[in-house]
Length: 65
Image 1 (cartoon, one colour):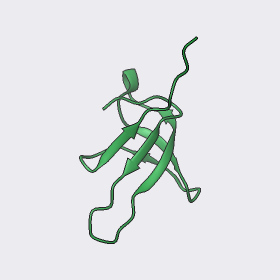
Image 2: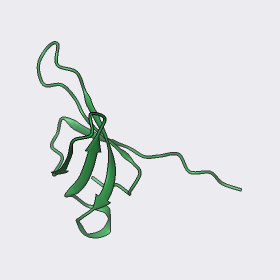
Image 3: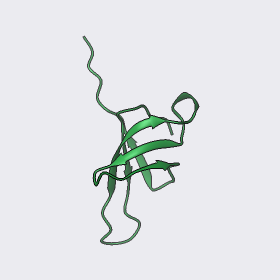
Image 4: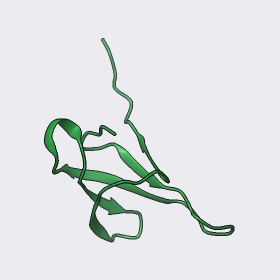
């Protein structure tokens, strides 16, 4: 798993009815974009995450000129 600051980390719900949690990666603590990541979630909570199999990284769009 590889991420950059500004990418989104999505933790999918593990049980029926549990919503996904979406957060913005505000700091990459591993080498070369590897985990762990400091993530700020939509509710304002901030924490250190080492993503598991129920997590995906959504890379922010980059513009080319």
